[in-house]
Length: 285
Ligand SMILES: CC(C)(COP(=O)(O)OP(=O)(O)OC[C@H]1O[C@@H](n2cnc3c(N)ncnc32)[C@H](O)[C@@H]1OP(=O)(O)O)[C@@H](O)C(=O)NCCC(=O)NCCSC(=O)C[C@H](O)C(=O)O
Ligand SMILES: [Mg+2]
Image (tube, rainbow, N blue to C red):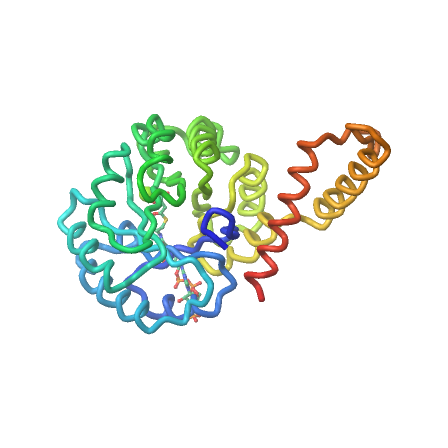
């Protein structure tokens, strides 16, 4: 399974400075973990967090979960040392904060060896405007929406329907899809509000997001459920494929199911739904 087609329904941030949380994550059913050295870690904990995280990653135990390390920006006093530490941490991907242009990615790529991918935090207006080029930059493996920073930069209001963020979410999603990389939705800050989280996950799923970034274990089950194909979607996918196969066998190019047409492109979507289900089941196994 490549990172482009593996499930990334639940992507949990863990501050690198919290040993208990780093331990707990080994048993959480998350698809991916962002081990954070940036905004979840206070300046006086930065060096300690890097060392604590190195110990945790070297000890291992994270199984098939995608291991992503978010470093501090190259323009900060910690960025260069974070990057230097990556060789020993050997994560699947490094997540760059506040990416503004493909040049930011190219500069980071020069310091990486092996297969390590680069993922980009999409959280600045300039980054969003350059999303298509960033998505095609060297080693680019995925986008993570930074909706808190975006809201700050846009000076927009915090609305439950996220209307002010829709342009940025749609632009980044479009760029990610054109480049064939995943796009993960931003965090829902009220981590004990299950109904609010579910509504926002549903919205992200409706938009086409691949998963949700999370900040607390209590959010994992809802993201895993919403970003997996539902029983109804799986049933419809199977019936569409069967109806189309039957139509083709009868010499027709279009089938009709439940009063709606089914064309080739709907069958592609149906097959993708079933492939997603398979990938989730394989990851669980
Ligand atoms: C929000 C928190 C500070 C709450 O922590 P805490 O008070 O410890 O919560 P609980 O007591 O309810 O925790 C229960 C147990 O769960 C473990 N735990 C808590 N959080 C995590 C976690 N993220 N990963 C793994 N495990 C976690 C606790 O250790 C407890 O375990 P146990 O002792 O066994 O019972 C805290 O959740 C937290 O710090 N969350 C992460 C915050 C974070 O990472 N923020 C930065 C990312 S958001 C961002 O920057 C996005 C982007 O850049 C943007 O711009 O939008
Ligand atoms: Mg941010």
